[in-house]
Image (cartoon, rainbow, N blue to C red; front, top):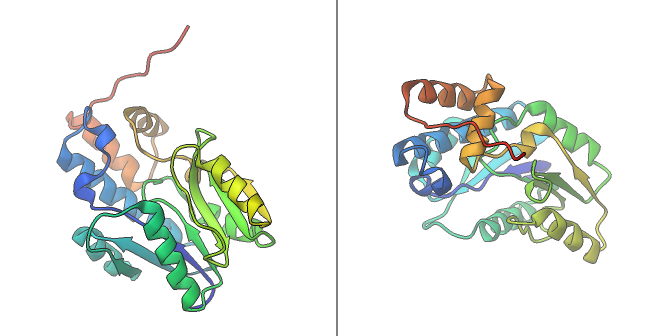
Length: 225
């Protein structure tokens, strides 16, 4: 195993996106998670410069989809901590001779292959590249050269935390901001924003059709005066 590998950890989709429960059913939330995953895989597979994709997951349907796309599955018997699983996958890549790891979530359906290629190119001189979430405080991607130089700490306020970690380890680093990397789907407002963008992705089409059928409830967010 050589080159740069993408790592896309994803938990059991039966428990995905609980914050969307007020606006869509369990079945719809699971379908959304699966479709977003496929959009992310499609972008990664069309990005020059990636050697391969590793997907740590306990989910049988995610495993089936991943194998159809030809990615490497790292079986997880039970749902576990995202950061721990990402770290384990990065260490496995390092042990097998991989040069770098791009860790990213499975819920950024607007990701493009061009953005991935831009990250790989622009961050070639850096040991760590931190991809900002659109809220400016979270992290939606972490490029590590080598794969195990730093422990990932995705979560609330993770952008600042990752910058602190890179500094404390003496690692050269940069923060990068791309629309596709930044746009994750967690809340009903995210779903509304995606709908308003009329995205041509499979996720965009799924959301638009589900809203039209009344299977996803959306409301225009209130404006603060």
